[in-house]
Length: 63
Image 1: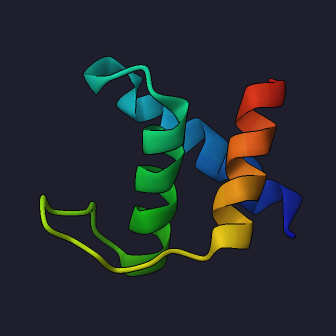
Image 2 (image 1 turned 120 degrees about the vertical axis):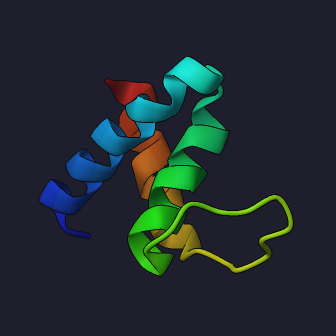
């Protein structure tokens, strides 16, 4: 895993804290935007790489 990418996505996940302080949701949204280039819509079921999502979530929880 690229540490710089994970740190960047952790920072991006914090941008969503204003709409809800849910680290799982916010990390998923940041990874989704990174992978697909857009934020998820209400019915968006596109998957994100689980390994990347979990790495971002773990780093965020540890910081």
